[in-house]
Length: 206
Image (cartoon, rainbow, N blue to C red; front, side):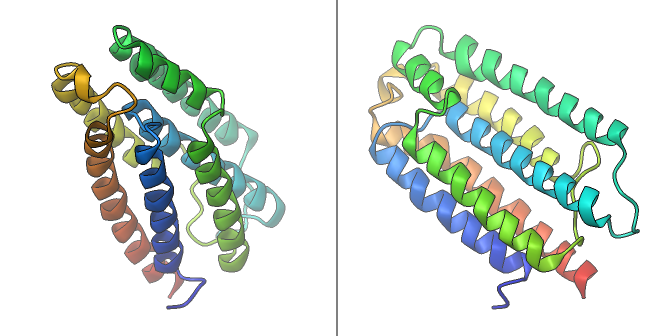
């Protein structure tokens, strides 16, 4: 498999996500907030790297992204973050102190598995972007990656309301089966969207 192909990058990134998240499940550090915040953070890192690359080297059409587009993108990320923190970090877990503590540690980057996931993703994506140049940049507001975040928030709300809230004894931050249930739908979502993304980007590159 070509190491510069989107398929290779997404395969490595998904395996990294899976292995580190499994460790987080065993350590009782994975919550709905953890997963959605991780998706948000990865998307933010990816967008920042794309913006830096595009400002330095130009986009596929040779133009550099405007300050307005960059500001609009960052504003959307701020709105997402506010929703994720208030809704998933606090409101939906207000009666479960264990989850609130895990979420707070994750938010403040005191969760080893989460932090490692972000650092490895940043390195992987920076190398990938350097290798493929300006192909498949995601800079405009509501690009494909943000669609994943949209769907993740909907799935996260469903999991939180239908399972976590109704069965708090399995989601105390120390229950392995509860954390595993949280991870599975997001893992399938990540694989599905990454497969489509890889196929689309491979077609554009070729």
